[in-house]
Image 1 (cartoon, one colour):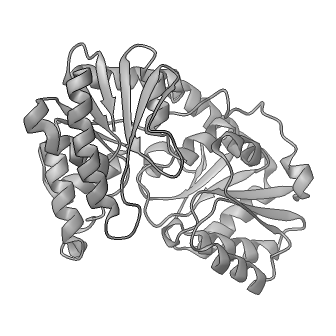
Image 2 (tube, rainbow, N blue to C red):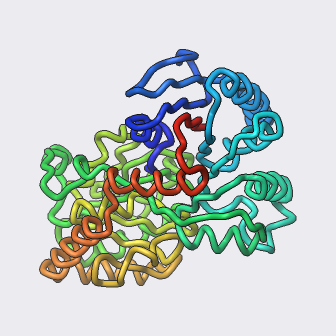
Length: 370
């Protein structure tokens, strides 16, 4: 659900000459123009064992070729795997590389350093040789600093969201069409172990014993879909649990509007845009105290923070909100005010990116985005 590099590129393209280099998949065209942004797609071998190697090779060649043609002032990369080919190209093109670090390192935690030695070495090499790092949260920065021990100049920059799409005034027919109850809990994201959806289902099942007419809305797809469906059946809440599957990003606000509370019970998270999206819509955001959540949420003021892997804690949060609608409304209102006052809309977000770019190069004009 995070802001994509293409979205950032389109916004930067209003003031700069922006070229995007991305992977070419399926029948996508090699070269396109999208909102004043030229997009080049490099081929790569999309099968296990060759994805990273082939991407780095072809993207490296693409950076060299396009730099000769465009003469980039700076190259902005969305994570370490996209920054690696740009860093490898630096000795040949002499162009500064800015790398965004959005999630916890795959080499996260000193105890896992040797288990993930391959990723550790690649990430450390990339981050150390980048000219500037943009972290998605202070927690991500602290994690990388602790594990990698690098000295690359950096700044923390939370995500931005489209406040025209995510706002309290939005209306949709999702609740009616799905027959949702009078208290709706929503999850938005990939259905993988780390997201903690098992905890959410178990907590909702316990809460369901005390509520009269509630619903659980799960929006997203992933490898755990079948197992999660089975769990909802085992716990007897399959009729009140709605697995929506993949939904195009443009339709996410419609489903979020149907929720009273949005939960992100992750075991680990860099910074999820779901936090800001839910808050911007005046919903009660509930999240575990990991990643950027503690940086955004003042407990029971503009959202709710829960303990990791604690089913009882989340169940009690559901009960309290369900029984106190005034509290739920007050938290939602405070959340909306927070997003507006702190400037998390796209315009303010791009202004922050402009300042970051100027800290790398005073007047960047031609920007490559990988």
